[in-house]
Picture (cartoon, rainbow, N blue to C red):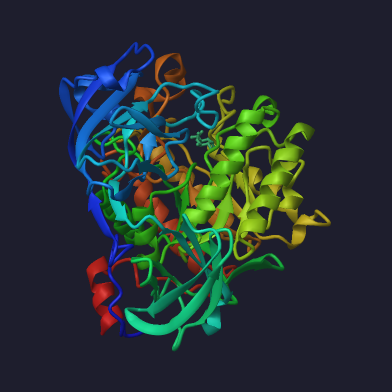
Length: 599
Ligand code: ADA
């Protein structure tokens, strides 16, 4: 572990040093309407309280209810001053009002958005946020009621009030031009900008690096930056750099913490910093029974420490854009991340729906724009388990691949298919990713040992790729595989839904996947049990949960956790495995690794 020689802030570091930013998390006034008419903010009188962030439909009074949660609070903005509100996540759809005036709407709970505060001569302003957790394919095209995970309502992420000059920095993005030599590009966007020549001071890791005069055209400007003594980011040594731009004449600044690394797929391998790597980990939902999808940073860190204790190095953020807080932790702890746009078994209907296509395109653009500075993200995905065995899927897939590669040529792009050898479009993907559950689904008519289906199910997919004239040069990831195990249900005869069967299933998977060097990654389904289908659909999911977690929903380990630890170790160290810069040994408590890093 290299000595950490620079003071790079940990966790959710400040994005601004000059700009005044207020965190508005806490308890807001609140009312819930199960059958709201057209909401009129002017007549709203709240009758209760709600924590922010929190899923209101995870709270006792509103648990599992669908309707409209209306939040209200006062903010203070200097008379005549400029300000905007930043929302990390509001579900499922959001409408924001300031002093009764509509200022923003948002249609996907997993995407950050902003709401301008209209300039006023009054200081005290009333903010109302309408969080609607009902499904509506017009208002929320990306959210459908049949997804196998609960989609929560409420202000699900932090809210910040930014006090800014009239002209302000809107975004700062760092692109690796030659990351391993520290040569990057910095892309800036300003609001109220148009064409201007602006003085800028550039800081790297807290020290003044250079002074520039930046030409902005249509509010955009870019410049190259050579980071002296570049520290390379890797799972074993997740070194980060802080890039900050100050516009003294404007009176605004912005900074991002990023990492220098490369990722590519070549001849059946995934290369990180030009070295082959193997990925072993889990799919993880942002979900907890007490918080819904408003999982606190403390739980995110606990989850990652649990995954680290199992020896995992990889997380697929299933099935939507991840929280900035979670990605910051993955950057800092050296986890490798697959991030994807919201999607779950989309059909021809969505592929042909203009509202869906536009929302999907907008979502991809915002996910990449907001998260491209995170070195932990090595691959972008979308359209999980869509009906990609049909020709109708071709257009949205081609458009999505083209869009992602145009926005970010530095990462791998893929999608997780459940159509196996019948998938029509795998040639578009940099990595071939299969969701497969042999020995779980489609065994219900069988009397024999269902575990006997695991190996042939995996082998069929590997052989299909290996014999394919185009796909055989692509790395394979088993992007989902697992079985349900109800916490506390023990039975050595291995019945379905016992912890014993789930653990035996993972051990059967282990014995198979370690024999195939073509398989470069595996993400077990999934990290922890989650609240899912309700009503009649829960016939598929005992207690209304997806119970394939290695841990139960309160993060209590099942037998599967130990089996997963054995799988990860075997997969990352097996003879078929290529040398992999694995993090410190799983047995070492996480805190010691930090000490090692700074030793
Ligand atoms: C699919 C889907 C997951 C989950 C899983 C399961 O692979 O992508 O979200 O629903 O099946 O548990 O059946």
